[in-house]
Length: 269
Image 1 (tube, one colour):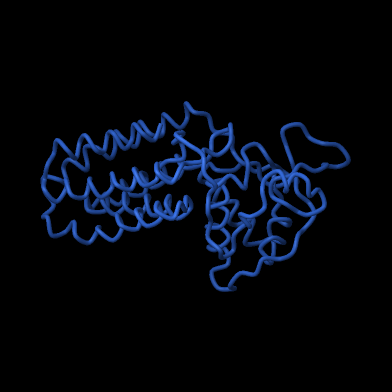
Image 2: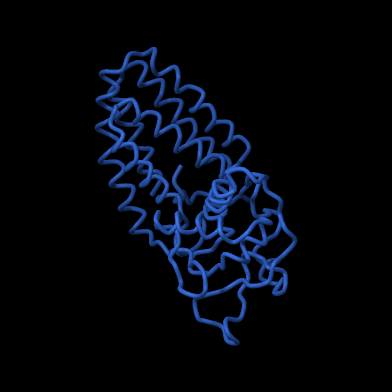
């Protein structure tokens, strides 16, 4: 499921570990000028920078496990991006985000640098990181590239992979169904990417897998107009496409595979 579905509105749900609280609404965050929220605007060096909001006052620490701190922070920030807690165009400082997670600024900076490499944020010298403002056209281009890469590969795999090998992917397809049933967008996008990645891994082309995963992740970041919230029913429909695709791959039904994959990508725009 790419971030571009626009058929309805529902509140996103996020992982509980090392994550920005979902219960704080964006309006509440903006009103908590002294609260270190993720959504509010603040003063930068005495005057507000147009198009940029920095966040300089910490809130109560959110504890995280000390092992793999950078990885936990990275995943929490990715979930916050997908869910819209980190808004396009706004600037966030590493020390303030670190205070939110109850860790030092170092793993936050490292995680933000990774997000910058992925194109999700941009470095703003002496201020922090600005969430990238991606246009609908950029999203359409990402989806087009993914389609050009994945459709022919899946059709080839449908002809060559024995039915028994597809059984290992069933739990991944079911994971998308479970996340969709909960309306958990953060979990859904992870499960969606894992399912597509597992299919492409069967091609034996690791470069393809890495490129496709990068494109998939980039297509999940919010648009400049803000996050696109998806109704639970739409998530369930997307998940159903995964299970139907797996059934078609098992049956080596090339026509259905072609139709389902193209429909899946078209619906993501």
